[in-house]
Length: 298
Length: 285
Image (tube, rainbow over all chains, first blue to last red):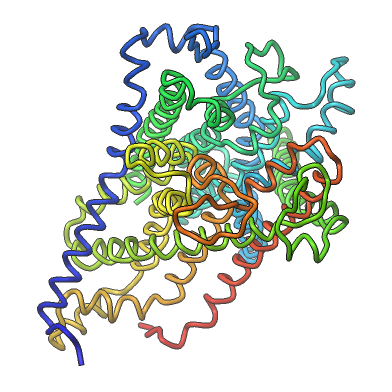
């Protein structure tokens, strides 16, 4: 019935498992090595400090300053976190501590759908709703004239996109806190809110930090939605109503032109390398927090 | 003191309710916007024709090239990711079940890889393409997207396989089965619904991502017909149509966004339904 006998089949299966595992486990190193080799042309010829902190971006005349893009990325990411973090924390506390279990059954599909919407669709929504909202409403409110395509628009779209990531982790964190802890606090006469504030949040702090960190890393690398609403102007933004440019948008926007200048291609690969390094670093640090949290929780 | 505490609780409770319902409201607004804008310019022509000459200046045609391109790319990538992903997930949960430290390490690496932005995969795929002398093509796009969804696929399967009770493994061993039989015959059957959910989740990611195919899959107005030729994808089609200054073309971008959203919603609905259906094969302890 079978071509191979049992132990032969076992060997084939086993070999395939090992090959797959090695492929997957080597992926981060392969990515790093590949991008590093590709950006070597640039790193070799310029000082790292010059690349990261020079403000002039003129690929045609060999000037590669990533500073405007790095600053743009940081502005957009931090602003998005500032909007998203309190909303997620409040929601996570509400759905885990103040509502019945049934409510989570409404919340979970909603979170899943938010997480599943493709980033280009978020971009379309941003152009249709957020950009006009800023140019017609928020801008005039602060007495600023703006087209709407701005750091703020990108941050608003981004803040919605990272809600499902942060919220999922936060809900998980609050649910793993042992019931006894809460009961002990309540039995000592603390109110529900006092328990939440001084027992639960304190206990969950490493988990909360980790959730925010994962969200931050996610936001930093987001490409299409940001690219569509951020304005894509290479200069240092002075206010949130100014258009900006982010690192992922830089890579995505210039893939056609880069082929004519070898150093240009190298520069875009360097931008990808920065993104990879930031993503790996943040995830590493946040795993440390999650580990600590798990140790205390169990 | 006590009263101020009560007021504080009330204020925060109101804030919590506002936060929670604003998330639900934003989701409703997004879905409503995409549907309302998309339906207005939706037509049979858009779904069933390829772009004709001058399409991007408002002439006739549709996005069939992108719909079929996206489907073939996402299906291919999902199959490849499954072929490499299932063995890894099984290996972790059957062969390494006693080596806790190693498993933690592997899960940690997978989580790291999951967190890497898709544009980095795109750039990496592009540099590999040049190294191997490939052109932008369906093949290059599929391979890049495979790398991108692989950690998602493995980790979601892993979460399900973890829940298989140890008693089942012991019972299987006691009947004389070896480890790979336990993995491929027992574990997979016990977790069918979870595995299908993981596949659908990865498929959704594969079809919706633009940044990883931007460099690698290219774009074309033709239907996909060869692995070595460029292929159009829905996210890029939306992006390119939206960049056109012609309002009629932008309207078609909204219709395309509706198509993509519908596909995603269908996939997610499907994966919710499947969890309930395949309980028959599952042994409850």
